Length: 208
Image (cartoon, rainbow, N blue to C red; front, side):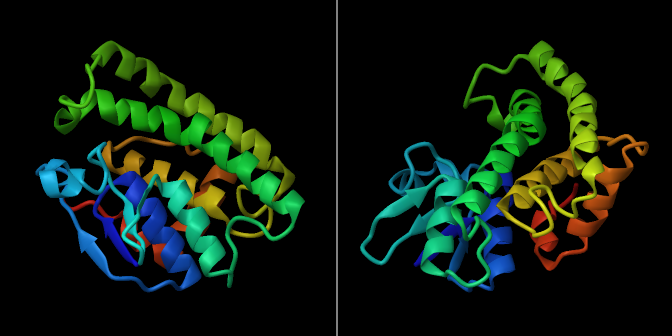
């Protein structure tokens, strides 16, 4: 297997996932900002021109970060990050989707509509970007209220892929120089915990 990755939120998800599970694979780094992911060679791997892409031994290219994580969690079952029982798996899936929609989603839309490199991917609407920016504090406040039960991580007391999705939002927040209200003590407790993990090193964006 070989992973095509780089400095990008969804690539971070897979790199952090691999770090947590102790998976060591060959990695080819592509530069999103200079357009390497949209060159013909990479478009043969992923017609959307995105990373990450996992190349399997049979030549198949697996795309979409959570699909790759699910595959790796199955192939490398030690230290599962997507649940062991039916209920655990469902709870983690529930929280991962919530983190995607409520926390990561507005950041992703904000980035797509305000970072120039994405101008050829969609029609950028600055006013829409502002609506997403306004959503962010309220959505973090929602997470604050959910974590008042004292849980250590997003889905419970064990670190999971849902936390990695939340960390992806933190990566974008750092790049965009956002501010998460200090009054959200439970959120900041979680932030301090996940930023102390070794996998956070993959979130570093040069020049950010």
